[in-house]
Length: 77
Image 1 (cartoon, rainbow, N blue to C red):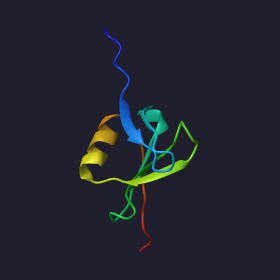
Image 2 (image 1 turned 90 degrees about the vertical axis):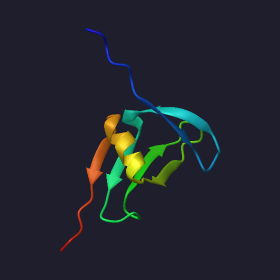
Image 3 (image 1 turned 180 degrees about the vertical axis):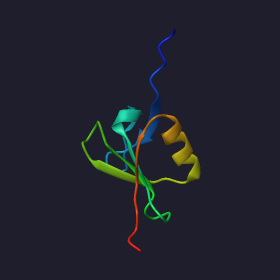
Image 4 (image 1 turned 120 degrees about the horizontal axis):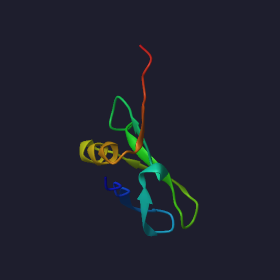
């Protein structure tokens, strides 16, 4: 049985403007009740900055399909 290929995602850092590929384990996806509370995060491998970017429906689909760990944010009633 073949070993599945590791999924990598292309990303860019707004601080150092570096461009790189990240494994699914290097990303985190948070899904909230609104567009403002739905985002993905990673640490830039070039400068160490903590990066947070908005995640629309297509990004959510790609990240979850690629095995990125997902946190669902709940709001208090």
